[in-house]
Amino acid sequence: MNILALESSCDETAAAVVQDGRKVLSNIIASQADEHRLYGGVVPEIASRRHAEAISGVTRQALEEAGVTLNEIDAVAVTYAPGLIGALLVGVNFAKGLSQAAGLPLVPVHHLRSHIAANYLVHPELKPPFLCLVVSGGHTHIVRVEDYTRFTVIGRTRDDAAGECFDKAARAMGMPYPGGVHLDKIAQNGDPTAFKLPRPHVEGSPFDFSFSGLKTAVINLLHKAEQRGETLPIPDLCASFQYTVCDILCTHTLAAAEQTGDKTIVLAGGVSANSGLRSRMERECAARGLSLYVPPLALCGDNAAMVGAQGYYEYVSGHVAGPDLNACATLPIE
Image (cartoon, rainbow, N blue to C red; front, side):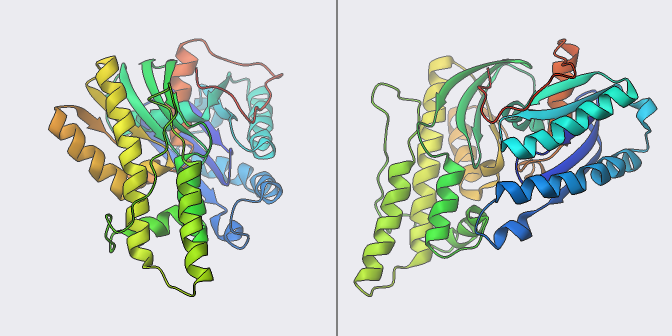
């Protein structure tokens, strides 16, 4: 079964063709990162306009690279939630038009579910149930994947997402957008024990996260140093910050696994590309005899191949939509 998948939830316009939820025939991404870098972050109105300009071209390119025509496509899958509402609407409306014109089923896909499904594309042996840490610029969740389309949230952030925390701390240190990537590189030359940073916790919810206080602590350190005319060792601050975030993420996830009894841990989302998180989780899982699956760097960020992977399982489960499908800026993964 060939799924034509579309993704436009933030600042990547993407289209892909995925076969049987596991094999990528094509995966085209038109990134807007260079333009948004001028403003220090994603500008929603600009993102929506660029999606409208690019979506037809990336779809055509995805079909050509896959070597298939619309007649060989079995369904159209599209990210409909969550994300920037204007950006999502571009993808959803294009997918609805394509679905109607070609007489193809329309499959709505949740963005976080598709991040988890990115792992199916490179790990053929991976099957539910398992425990997944989904960590990105807008979301931080510990999710138990009961089945391909059944999910239970074990923990979530109460304020900032980990990726947002990375980007804002990096911006405060003068790094360009997207800051998390630059912070990761600089941290590799720093001392992770140089700064003792707070590890906020949520009373009564041991698996939930809170990163706002940690972000504020870093910003306050920088402001105080500036007021005193001092210069902080940025590599050390980056390393300490990254170590703290990764420590929180790993500790919560492994504690959740101990409670649920899961022996398979999966990473997903943009922050799963972070070198500190990957190496720390590898060590901790190995020490506990747990299996760890991580997506390749190319599939950590937003892409349409992951939408096609999850779209396949949504379709075979009977989750299809009609022409009244609408986009949703926020929507639980369950």
